[in-house]
Image 1 (cartoon, rainbow, N blue to C red):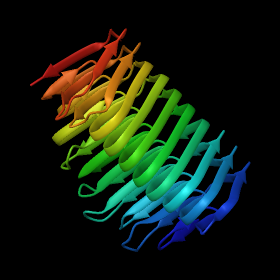
Image 2 (image 1 turned 60 degrees about the horizontal axis):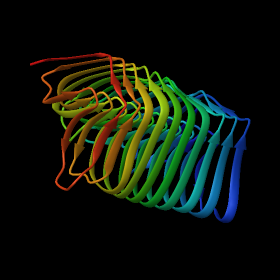
Image 3 (image 1 turned 90 degrees about the vertical axis):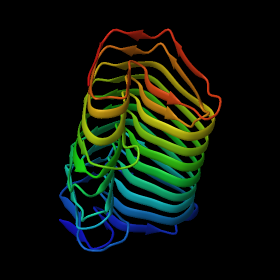
Image 4 (image 1 turned 135 degrees about the vertical axis):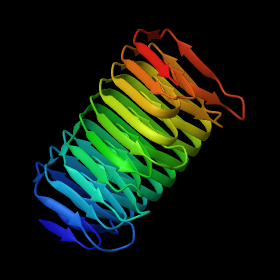
Length: 362
C-alpha cells in the first residue's frame, strides 16, 4: 500500500524537469495494491504508476505492455487520479504513448464539501501545458469508479478526465475496449467514455478510431452549469481551433442520469460549446446502448447539445439502434439534442439511420 499526503504513485510519486529529448520507458510492468491520498488541500496527483509529471520540456514517456490492477482512493480533498499517471501539468512538447496497456482500477473518492475529483483510466488530468501529444493504441479501460459526496464536482473519463488550459494538444486513441463503470453522486459532473472534459485550449486535434465501448454510467447530479455526459467525450468548451474525428466505433453501454439541472447527454459527445474553427466528424459510429435521462435539457443519440459554436459538425453513415428515454427533457433527438448557435454553423447529417426507440414523458 502507498499512502501520500500530496502526490502518490505506484512506482514514482513525482517526475520533474525531464527535458532535452529525455525519455522514460515503463515496459512489461504490473502495478497492484492500494494507492491513496489523505490530507492536503491543493490539487495533486495519484497514479497507478506515477503521481505527477510536472515542469518538463521536450520529453517522452512510453508505457508499453503494462497494467494497473490496484485500487485508487482519495479522501478529504481535491484529487487528480489516473490508472497510470495522476496529473500532467506545466509541460511543453511532451509525448505520452500507451501501447497494449490495461487499467483495471477500482477507485473511490470521498472528497470534502465543494472539492473537485478528476479521474482518468490512464491519465487523471492535463493542465497548464504548451504542447502535449498523446497516443493510446490497443488499450483496455476497466474497473469501477465510485464517488460518494453530493457537494463535490466530478470530472470522469475512461482514458483522461480533464485536458485543460493549454496551447496545443493532439490526442489519438485507437483500438480501445472500454468497460468502465461510473457510479457518481455529486454536485456537478462532466463525464465521457474516453475523455471527460476538453476545454480552454487554443488548438485541439482529437482522433478516436476503432473503439468498442460498453461503459456504464449511473449518475446523480444536483447542480452545476451545463453538466454533461457522452459515450466518448463528455464536455468540449472554449477551444479556438477544434478538430475531432470519431470513426468506426461502437457504443453498447448504458447511461442513466438523474439531474436537477439542465443535463446534456449524447451517445458520442455530451456538449459542445464556445468553439471556433475546425470540424467535428462522426463517421460510421454505431450507438446500440441505452440512454436514460431524468430532467435532461439536450439529449441526443450522438450529440446532446451544440451551443454558441461555429465548428462545423458532420454525421455520416452513423446508426442509432439503441434506446433513448427521457423524463422531462427539453430537447430530445436521435442525432443532436439541440443546436443553439450565436454564429453561423454548418451541421450535416448524411446517410445515417435511426432504427432504435426514442421516447419522452413530461
